[in-house]
Length: 281
Image 1 (cartoon, rainbow, N blue to C red):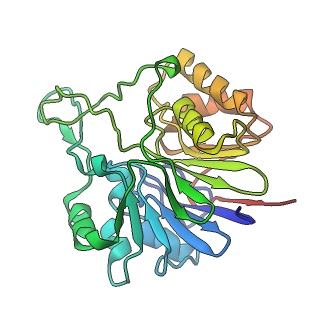
Image 2 (image 1 turned 90 degrees about the horizontal axis):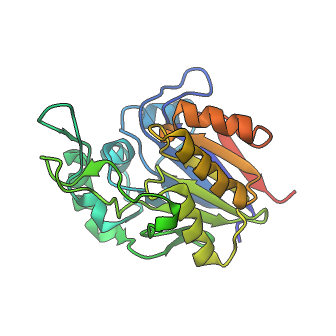
């Protein structure tokens, strides 16, 4: 059980304070009691500069968790691992697969782990933990591992592909989230929630035996979602009796606006420099 949890946003599409930089991507420092975990690394263009500006030391981390294998979550690995003893890195094996997004015309866009990040992982392969299944990162903090897609929670197609011709759909089996057991309740931290936030919350419920979630923070991947899809995701959130919701990154402005209107009392604006702190009242 974590007594004190602090989440600091180091990379995101928006900034929440002066003298910080934004990029399309996500990275969060998670401080769980005395343990420090970096959840994703952004593209790598702003990670170290924002950490310096916030007075945060990236050396001496206990762990790095990669939510999935897209460039905007893994690009900062070489910067992070440069010149310091490598922490344990938690990642699903499918994160290393080629990944593409379809363009209007070929060649289609490669969006997988950048080659420098791939080489950085290879260099510290003895420190890599593969997370097909639920895995404890540090005491009280867990990685979901692969998240089953339940048909009742919507379509499983991601719109991404495994081949450069964009013919073989990428199921994004590597998509995973963190959940933390705090005195307030469960806190779920999502990178992009490509599996769907409903499926993610169902996975956490199965793993913990608890249906209520105190807080959700991270990307919800609703930026291309229809109003019907946004409403369905909001219903899944409401069913968990969430008390704090911090959507960011790939959630999208339409979805964020909808969530603010529907859940205005507990939606938090998130951006680089935001701190969310959870401790027993």
